Amino acid sequence: MISKAATLLVSAVALAIPVASSAQLRVVTSRDGAGEVTAVELVTLRSREEIQEDLEHASRTVAMAEADIVECRSEVQRCEADVDIQKSRIDITKTELKLARSQRREADRQNLSQRRRVQEAEKELLERVEDAVSARLKYSERLLEWAQAAVTAYQLELEFLDKNQELIALEEEVDQAQAPDWLGEGLDDLRGRVLNAMRIEAERDGRVARERRGFVNAQLRVLDAQRKLTATISEPG
Image (cartoon, rainbow, N blue to C red):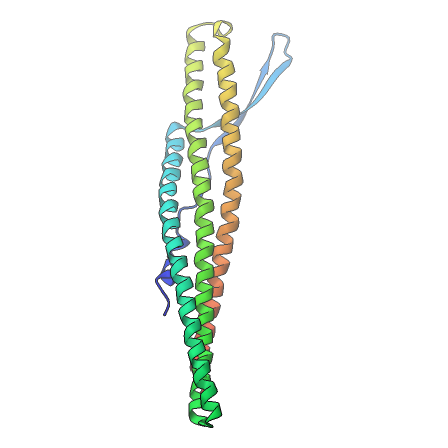
């Protein structure tokens, strides 16, 4: 008998996945009085609403992935127990089959041989389900890592947005040359932290894709095992 792991697999594909940003990009070139280039900055333009939406999505994904990890770990244990029980059933059938052969009970031998083939196919299906649940566990773990990194990146992006607006407001009130150096330097430092956080988030995003692909492949193997079981059951005794 297959536990609820089989139904767990179907819903996993809909688990939250990273979303792409629609941020616009522009290049800002700073020049001195002589027209010489002093700095080139790639500025990613994102509204507070867009950042906040991504932050909320990532936060929800953290909660979803954490819950899914707990459920998958429990289900892996159930799957292992299902496989062990099925192995015991096969051992019993093997013993009965050996006895039927020794006693030359041909009808029983044929029935037991068919039962064993079906039980072996059932065991393979249970093992493939266990593999798929384990693959979903790995996927959920990588998804959690991505979501946690994304939350950090989006929080820093909001902080950078606030600091940048603060600097713009200050420069509008006073001459740019009179703006405190520490404010601009602090913004540069924060920009570096934002970019580093985004780098980590992007790396983990790639890991999520790999594990999700592995999980989908594991589900395909479950489907193959299910078809094999159906065909085995249909075989004549």
